[in-house]
Image (tube, rainbow, N blue to C red; front, side, top):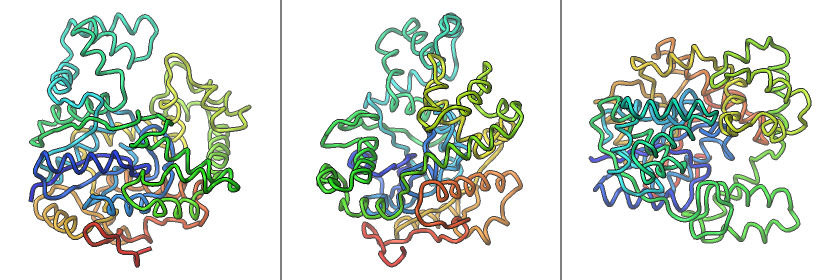
Length: 424
């Protein structure tokens, strides 16, 4: 069996995701699709709009065969850590033949060539980068400008858009790990990553906005939700009904209050040791928390020319879960191999799992009450963060309280292309 690997968030699963799967399977002649999906928190530092099992169910209904969780220690980190963690897990499964990712470019060769330069960092490029950083711009902007000086505008343009940037990190990770996995990219379809504009391919941001607007304006919810008609790769009700039943619109308020309590009741050094905190940012964060009345207001008081919103949100999430620099470095060490946390599968996915069990180099977790005892102390520590993230997601953003659901929830199982409705 030839297996296609995808690293994603599916927050929520949309037409662009379905198009990527269909196109990638056809071009790669793959028989099955395995996805590593962010769990409760996303790479940009937001809690997912639905819990990971509901999002798994939608993915299985729309073309995915096996969904496993990308651990929080990778999922809510920089693009480099996100991509490297996912590729590390794919390498350890021993079954992935080709990894597919979307990009604004749509062409693999220019991305591969640029990725190799970013890995090896020739002296002339490093000189340009140092010069740009000294001007006071953020690292992503400095890197873009340095590449423009080194290779020209076309290469620099590859570093301007979010999907291209993440694609480059996947390719860097494949190169650094000397992976045998092939790579391919498909051109992103429809609206831009953050676009809220109507489109045949609605962005995940647009879908989330529609859902939240409908919840905030129940008197016109029916009209608002019509924007989703025929714009999803499954029945709109399969997304709308779980969202209405499970989503708590006050989640950001609970998140802010928990942050305020934790950060203001600890010494500033506690915050300073959080990943991505530098340049005295710990003081700015504490000051913002003292006076902000909403989460968005707090974030906006922290961001600057050098500190983008996504970095701030990741800092806040990492601090909430009490992830520090020392632990994150252990998770990112080349010698550390994580685990494979199974969220759901169909019959093809079950066959992929069997092959991983026979050929892979990492423990497979389907029942935490039993399987966590097979983990090393560091693997258990990583798993603890996943469970903590799930608990916070449940306490802040879900209407039904379920503490330690990770220990109670079985993987979602379904027939190929048909979700088993009895496993609710």
